[in-house]
Image (tube, rainbow, N blue to C red; front, side, top):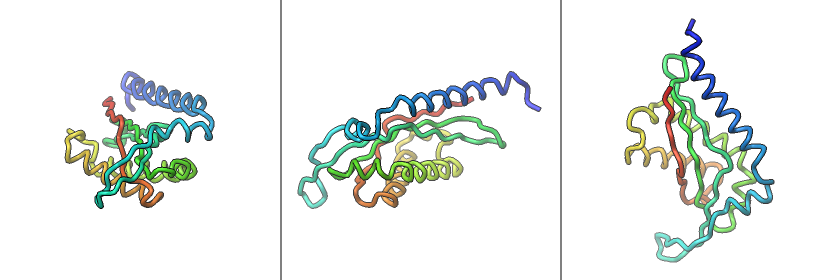
Length: 160
């Protein structure tokens, strides 16, 4: 049985994340306000055909927390904040599908983690490009071509 001194930091970290998640849940704006505040800005973007399309940036309300398991125990946590670049006018569609979207993103992140995607120097360009491509494909399966890009706005790995 592991000693209490080894379990205490893990327990404190998980407790802190749980309390933070609960605080974020209870302190977030009402759904009508969330869509208005989270669509950060609308701006023209040059498309491949040369025409300009308007896009909006939608910040997903809560962070994504991914445990990294080694030898059957949580060894680290990866925390990500994600925003989506969407076709202008699609913000409401994102928020109406957010529970399904969060589920699909978390499932992808767990699979990515289990495949070693967060091991070693996971912030190297090629590793981040692979993560971003996988997230974009996952999000587009739920929302279609309304999503033009996935932006990882924060990422941190907390090793225990």
